[in-house]
Image (cartoon, rainbow over all chains, first blue to last red; front, side, top):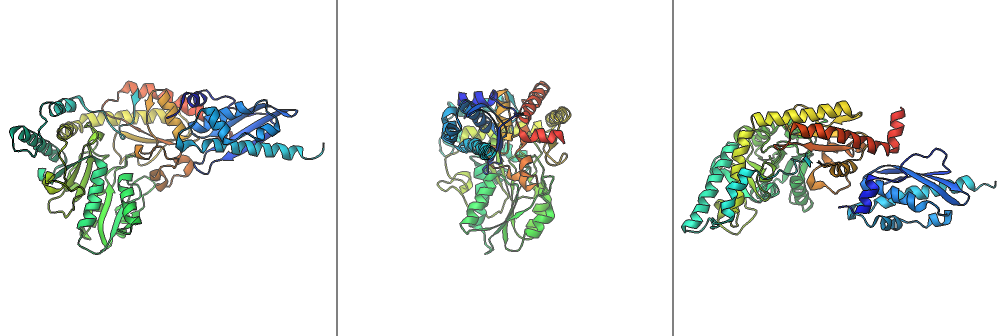
Length: 125
Length: 389
């Protein structure tokens, strides 16, 4: 049902932890299955220095969060905004049809985190 | 592999396979043929019919062989509809029926052929005879109830429901697929007019099933095309499968004694160890009135599909919900009907034991399950919050 990449990210999820000194935090919730994901971002100037996540979700959700955090590290805010559910799906090498909504959950958490970051930094310093 | 998914299917018993092999080799005759080869197949089928009849307290003439539980349920429902004499088109069923009953009723309802009234289930996973009695009117031509639920194992008050339904003139269909080989089945005591069994749930191969049809019951055929099965089901008989089913029924009848007690004790051991070693664990459904091999466990703050996948990778086969509904992101309709909230329903998995289960399996599985629950909870943002409170 799942390919080797997905199974690896499910069994050994990367960056699966809560971040203490995050610069931005975002939440996603899937209307399809009720899964939730929290994403934490740490910025170093204009670049994402670190990304971690936690999820209450199925194997595909765990794997989606794992590859997303890997994709985000080192990206600028602008590049992070260009990450889509398809980017996550590609990085996973595909998912079963019924799990195609899982990357959406990860991207919802990302967009929420990026909004959080923009709000915090929109006021003139 | 540790196999805890016997409600999904069971392996073919060695003695069943042995009994079947001749009919897959030299004894290939068509049971409708006049020659000796054909007549030996006929005899094999009739011997199996007697074995199955003996298994459920029926007359051999009341046994119709089918391709499985799903066909039997379709047959009973659509056959009752096509043969009914009253204009009323109400069918009463429970909220926890298997998809092979639910989806048939939904189809007939969506196409305007029946009015389906669904009786609720209590928190313990059991319907009340009163709910059925209240829903059953003079317009009701059929009442459907499973004898035991596939997900929780909860045993339903079949005899009481059958009695009150028959008084109102309705036919009574019992989906006994999850009772076969787990509980003694006596069609007279249950009071059903039709009763479905599936062979692969008790050691016969897939593709074998039974519909018991009480003598005198008006039931139209589902499959037309030949005079087989007393004109009730056309098609050349699956001789080897039927022989296997007969042998499995014989075995199941014997295994209902000490073997059933052994399996129940192992199930109780599994539940006891899980409750002791895994915090925030709940058992769904009635602890007493249920089949002895099944437990439906809620590991709060886990996701059942992630659990099933992680346990599979550790060599334990179990399931969330029914195998027939697997792959759906929806929580179990059975658990939701019992009033479980979405999050608890999504966190529940089923372990169903069987003849191959040994005490070592339980002892080996529990730490692996505990470890998996703990790992999944660590990744859950809600668990950290819950643990703080």
